[in-house]
Structure formats: C-alpha cells, structure tokens
Image (cartoon, rainbow, N blue to C red; front, side, top):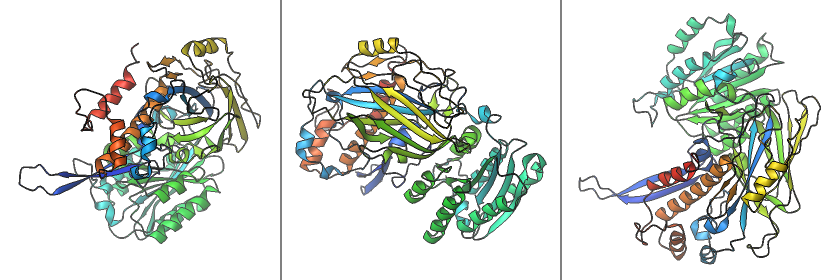
Length: 555
C-alpha cells in the first residue's frame, strides 16, 4: 500500500490529472510559437509532501487509528466536481450540476482519516536494530539507457552514477546478521555477489567492484529476476525466519514481453515469501507495473528523479521499505447509514468502490520526523450518508458506526481490530463525548482474533495500545466544519486543494464551452484583486494552501 516516493506520472494512478496548456512564447526573440506545458497533479503526491500527527506507537507492530471530520458543503468550492478519482472531463459534467452549488447549511460531508501505526515507524536509524533480519538481493540495471542523465539533476549525473552511489548508501544500512547479494543485468544477468552474510562479506572489495560498473547493452529484466531468485534457492543462508527481498534499481526500459514475464515472476515469488521492491530510476513506472506490484503481497515500488530523493530513500526509508508489517488487510465500514464513497492516499485506496470494503495487500512502516509526525501511509475516506437528501430533513449526525480491520500478521496469524466511531454536529458535543469515553483496552497480541472498541474521540483513538501517545485538539472552522485534530483537517484540505487544481488545469487547457466557462465561474477566488474574467495565477495557490494548513498551529 505505502508508496515510498510517489510518481508524478499521469499513467501511474487513476487519481492523476494531466493538463496540457498552450501559451505564447515570450523570450524576446520574435518566436511566438505555442509552447506546450504539461502539469501532473495527484492526491498521493500531495499527501506524501506533508507530515500528519497520527500518534506514536511504542509496542505493537500494527494498529489501526482513526480520526473523523464533518465539513460544510456550502463552502466546498469543489462540491460539484466528480472527485471519485476517475478524472472525468469537464465536457461530461452537465451545466445544471455546475450551477447547483448552493445547498442547505445543515448538510455535512463526512470524512474518516485512517492510519496504520507501528512500533517500526520512524527512520532507518531508528529501525536498524528493531527490524527483523534481512536477506536482500539487489538487481542493478547496467543497460545502455542507464547512461542517460536525470532530467531534473542540475549537476548532470547519469542514472548509473546515482544508482551506484545509492547502492553504496544502502549497504551501510545492513546489520551483521543480514545477508546481501548483487546481480547486475543488461541483456544478460551476472551474479556479482552471491547471497552472503554481511559480516562475512569483504565490503572493501565489493565497493571496488560496484565502482567499476559501466552502462551498456540492452535489457532483459526477466533474466535478472530469475538470477536473483536462484540466489535464494541455491544459497546456504537461512531464508525461513527472515525477510527475503529482491530490490530492482532500474529505469524499466524493457519490452512488453519482458515486462510481462518479470511481473509474473514477482507474483510467483511472493507465494514463497520472496518479495520484490521496484525502484524506478529517472523514469515513472507504468500503471501496469504499479498495479501489479502494489497488489502483490509483500511488494512495493517507488520512483526517484534525482540524487537527493535516491539518497533519502536509502538513508531514511530503507528499513521501512524492506519491512512489511501486515498482509491481506481488509477494512470495512459497518453501518446501515454510512458507506465509503471515495478514497485518497494510494492507488489501492483510490480504487475503493462506493459501498464496498477496502483491500490492501501489504502495509509497511511510515517515516516520522523528530516530533513524531508521520509521512506517507495516510488514508482519507469520504463517507456517504444515506439519510441525507441534499441537506433537507437530515437527522443529527451522531449515529455510531463501526470500523473493522482484519489482517495477517508476520507469523501468518489472522487478527481483527474493531472500533466504534461517530460524527457530530457541534464542537461542544464532540468535546463532551471525548470527556465521557473510557480508554479502550489493548488488543491482544497472542490470540488469532482480537478487538477493541472506543469512540472516535477517545484519547486512545490514536492506537488501541496504551503505550501510544497522541494529542487531539478539536478544530472548528468559521463555516461550522469540525475536525477531530489537525491531521484529518490537513488531509481534507489537501483533497480539496488537489480537486481545485485539477479543475483549474482542465479549464486552462480546455476550449471555451458553456460547461468550462460555468465551471470557471465557480472556482474563481472572490478577491477584489482578481478581475472576474481572469482565473487566479497558479503560483498563488500553494501560498493559499500553506496559510490554511498552518493558521491553527500556534493557537
């Protein structure tokens, strides 16, 4: 589920919007030919760029945590835009729906913010001595395309140079009891280092051999995964009670047939508890690769565009990348009234269908900063209320509902966590409920099924473990929107912001039709400095969001 570094490719996930706008060149050389500008916007990238206060878990490997929010739809500038992550075109939106933005003040949009906390959350330095021992084989692409430069690298380093440097960063993360192997591949695969205990490896000689590598030739990634798999099956290293992983560092310049064979091998290896990480070097992974890898148990992927992000991956996030904490996760919202309407945070979450349960193949630990705030892995769900009819005659929003999560732990034992949540109409009701709710008991760590129940506003809602710490400060906006804490508020604002950008970019690139002009009139900022015929300039939008996200921080 958890992306380490998000892709910026529109093909990577259905939640990406790509906008192509044409402008007149203004370089002063007399050339007024159109210039094509492509912009990519995604919910995943927006979430990944921020940290969230979701609590700190000190004991348990995997604990679901929840926060809730109820926002006023009358202030939602995107309430008439299809935000179910399917990127409908503006032309498919009727002008009648665009013009019906007003709604009853009593109507609320409900949200549930979910995070899976773990004692392994943190940085690689924190996890190094905590994570299970690791058997890892690195498959390094040395084909000719790796000699190309990173498009965003200012000092013009090749993909090969950056991959070599990052590999040297990676081996510094290994523990003496870990095992390491290295396969390099172009049109052929070569074993440069058999799978060997790290304490028995000649590190100086290995560094020299890595430094001598040069990029040339074609690419056969299917040969690479076969050679890497054989290192596990032919090695004397114990592979039964440790984490076994093949990590590919590649730009994925492969043929269709080679790519299909590669993905088939990833799936087959997973059934034998041999997992794969695919690091796209300087090139966005295709949607097919992302979908297959993210839905395969124990596997994950990421993209890196420059030396800085590669170094961050190897230095700060290596341990979390190679350490799964839960498998075959199923999340359901149990209620006769409420149901999932849309999800945000990852490709798997974005694919949740209205009224259906969410399935996640694997969960990994999250990166945390010095203040214990978490980046990546945050999920936000828009919740539909079946008893709301455009805000007319809707009953009070304080009917309890249940969140149920089941998963397989690292030993293959099935676990269950159950928690009761509620939405509320006023801050006073939320505060009173929080004060009257008892602390939930810890979930059992030994039985095959465990559960805990607590209100969404319980002080223990950040974790079912009593060792977790979190401070929830209920926030209320001027329009009556209620947020259980700053984390859920930040997530909701990011979703609204990305939806706004999607519409903005669509309008900038669209023809002047009745639909686009009507839509444009609805998203213009009501500020006197903006003429009604002009949209606000794009560079202002991040500044507006920055203010909204941080204005509660010092209260």
